[in-house]
Image (cartoon, helix red, strand yellow):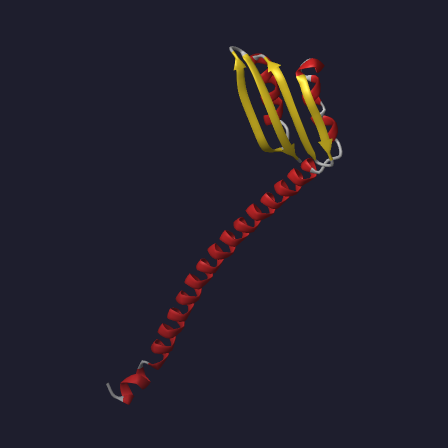
Length: 138
């Protein structure tokens, strides 16, 4: 190709380069838009997780948790509660001569409370008679 041919098609070459530049810009815009949408969705998910965590922290640090734990003492007869000690945010309790129904009631209450079970020991004394030792914190 010589310079005369390039001079003749100069406008067409400029138009072709402009068209290629516009095409690349369009594809870049599409990829950037999808990248922004993915980041926005990820940020929304993180925000929702943070709010859930803060709600759980409020629930765990609630002043009413100490009173909610007292329910574990009143589920069974006072004669079956061997010890029940609350120290700051920790509960140490032991039960004796529990029936299977009473044991299930205590376990259901434990699982439905926002507490961390540190130690849970259940032993069968005789047939259908259980002892239970529990340590939990909130």
